Amino acid sequence: MLISYWQRGSGQRPESGPHTAPEAYVVDHFSRAGTHAVIDFWERRLLTPSIRKLLKRSGGALFEDSIEIESDALPWTPELPAEFERRRGYPLTDVLPVVVLADEDPVFAFDPVLTRHARKDYWDTVSELFNEHHFTALRDWAHSLGLRLRAQPYGLQTDAIEAAAILDVPEGESLGFKNLDDYRCLAGGRDMAGGAVLSCEAGGVPGRGLHDDVAQAAADDGRRVRGGAQPDGAARLLVRERAGRAVAGVRGVHAVRGVRWGTRSRGARASPPGTTSPTFPDISREST
Image 1 (cartoon, rainbow, N blue to C red):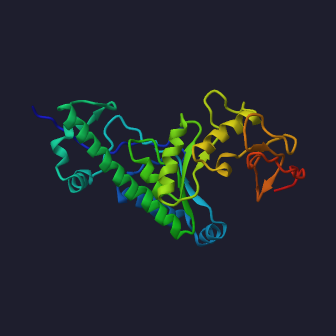
Image 2: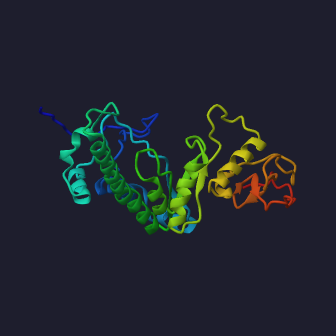
Image 3: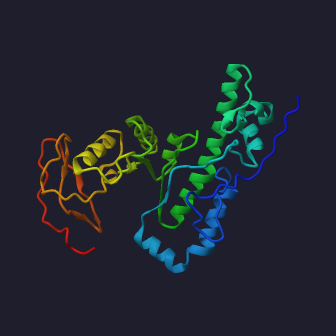
């Protein structure tokens, strides 16, 4: 039997595009070349001297959303065969038939043990390339600008826990995470690296968009806090409730009205269990 394979670019474009003219395409996330294509574009076209000064003065973080690399074929990069053999100790071509996907499904299988081993080795290699050439490179570049890197490191069969240890601020989300273990995995990587923050893209709930009241939103955020997310990263709400009123059923989380931290207004604040929420003045009409 003769099996042939070929490689090509995915041609993937951002969702709901085009957003640019000419159209932009997704870069290779598993190679230095792909990440440096992004960095070089920013360095040449966006980061003027005045922008660099403003970034250093304001601080903050560059942000990358969840990994949404979509293709019906197998994720690939030109250096993958060489990197696979260097890291795993045997040629990728020997097991390529059981690794290759068609319409996102495997095509062939060897005996079960060998098949599982080959597929794990493939994804371990892809994960290492992704974390080294994408997240680590972007983090180091962000540091050179006086910024941190915040990202949602999931979406492929890559090691999100390792990625959480690389990122300055790993982030989860209410829309895609189905249980507390999703948060705990990222919190574990954060903790192993000595990090302090796991942020959360909160408020996205299937079927409840823009319909949550404060009690439901605070309860959802309370659960995420138990999973390891930061209270100040999960709560981004301006709550129009009477100051000092506790949110029913959520121990340690209270609603406050129009409380301002810097230029942001946040309406859920963590308080120690057994204490009452402080009373703040009504400053919700102050200008930002």
